Length: 132
Image 1 (cartoon, rainbow, N blue to C red):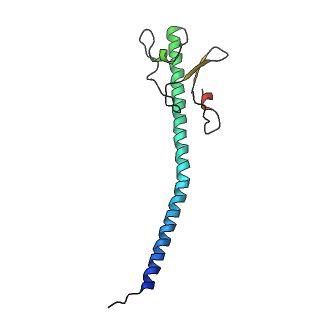
Image 2: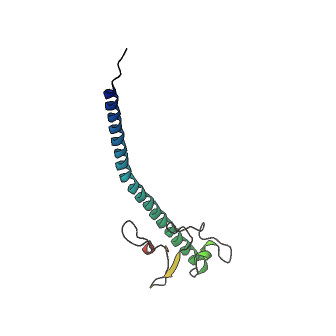
Image 3: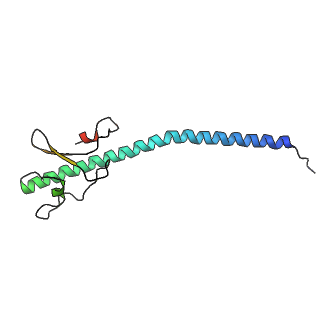
């Protein structure tokens, strides 16, 4: 019959605790690297979406101007003009504010510019409101 040795059990428990501690430490290090990287990927995706939507606005403004020989008065007119024409496929929300709150402004050459209402900084350090 095997004899009971308390010293042997405590050594095994100590090794198990050491393995568990090292495993948790490695998991924590992995997460500390992965979480900021995932956040960066989300911001890049939103920036790509912002560039796409701004391109859609440029296309819609150009089509509206060719059709009506004037610039639209606001984003709502791009969604449906007085004749019922749609120049913008849908009311794209701003990826950073989550709302349809685009800012329309005119430049020095009297062109209509659309930009985000967000004042956040991009990955490169430029404001999202400066994206055109």
